[in-house]
Length: 211
Image (cartoon, rainbow, N blue to C red; front, side, top):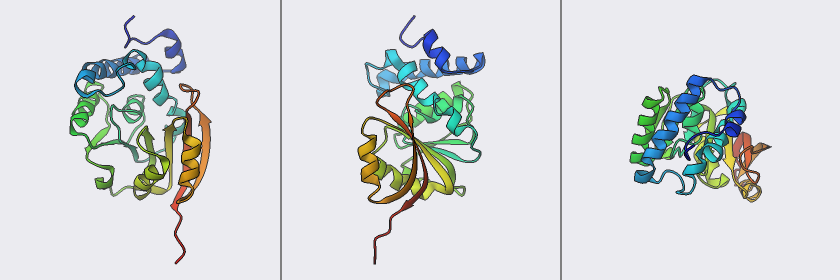
């Protein structure tokens, strides 16, 4: 078994994934591995743990996001985490926003290779325009919550949610963000990182200073 092969334990934790979908995920992982030397898409030491540290980390969002219909945005997609993984796993109406043009080339090739319908926007989050507000916004390892909320708010529908993968500093980030933002937050443990959390953010609105 090579570093990019999936081990039986991780496969079981992915849940009820069809053979066709698993083959598409494997194609994506192989594609990422081939591009790793060009773009350093993930940490050099993580390529041998890509299934448990990255694929599983993204896949755990499926029960939270798949029932929601409508436009979905993945901010700062990078290597495709979590947006490309979720799209391969069947989440529809996804647009991946990435400012690095070479990474966008990688993402477009990944979408074609895996026959995934995700759209790729080559540009900054602040430059993205859409006539349809997003029902869901995702992000992983992009920015502290305060900055992330500032990017997400103009793009988010009034009843939309942010589903965010955060690391061990999530408590401090939540405290800091509440100085500028009204939020309702659900906190869920991460299946792939004992120190990480999944944050589901609703009711995102800025706190307006008194005149």
